[in-house]
Length: 127
Image 1 (tube, rainbow, N blue to C red):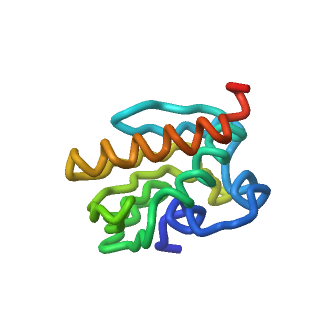
Image 2 (spheres, rainbow, N blue to C red):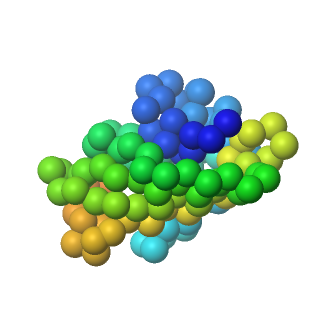
């Protein structure tokens, strides 16, 4: 299956379905911050699904459990390019995912939008 798991989860409206596609020890990495644990990462992905707009794959590569997907999309009407690197377990659940966006100006816009969204609905580990 070539489509990035994270890319599919950004469109998933059901938080339980997102959670089921992650391992208990899942790690989410980005240039801004790292997150660990199924509950926090599932909440983060659900929030990203609202903040990031029209995210589409441009190219995808798969080597065993490691997947790389180059993406394009927008946030607050600012276009971005990016890359998703992920490692899946034998059941296809995400063990580790890294998300990078460019240009830097759009990354700043995305960070501000995510911070505002997480202020309204904090991560489970940060009540």
